[in-house]
Image (cartoon, rainbow, N blue to C red):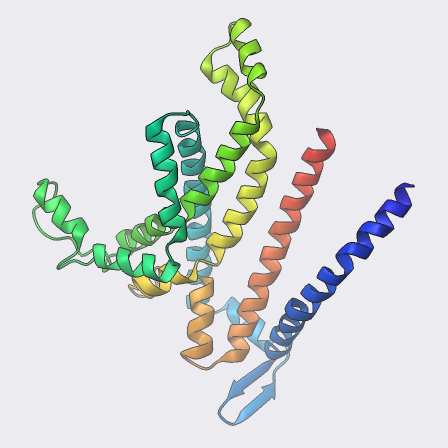
Length: 290
């Protein structure tokens, strides 16, 4: 009986799997093929793995790799941490919480390019709203050039990305919190547990499956955050905010070095597959234990 159920499940997912294989597998194969060639206006020349080995001694690529790691880790931690905190604060059934939950939809519904442009205007050193606010509150004495310094430009892009990603993680955690049976907390109160003990022994274990899914989605979205870097900082100053996806775009459509850009894209694909597989195995293990 169990074997029949599996065969039926495979039969139903086969059309979707074939569709994904056709429209995702073919581009991946083409990227791998292109990465083995050096492209120029004269045509293509087969170079084997030269595009890959050349990245090892590429100082810009190594800097981009470091920037991508820092960007992804910070973005995921900020997104998950802020989303969980917001969900805990907004889990109460009050009018204020309901209004805030409704307002979060605006950030989610705003197109990424529009949001990035708006944040870039706010960070403008001459007429940006952020400087106007800080000057009016006498926090700074003169306008700050936010996008000409690597730390502030990097942090500004991170905060803008958090603003658009926060609604998803907040509502994901909020849905999981509302699904936790109330009688568990009531029993804990009778047993005399503290707020921290309830959070540690009830909330966190029951949120773990959702947290793993949110971590995976946040990692993929953060790694592929092209819009915020491209629009807000452009990778500057001096490539200090350049990440993998923007560097791939620059080498492909700025320098027309499609072979090297494809090699970077294929390495990024392998990294995402490896992390996704690890997360899936971890999630599967959690499901089996529960």
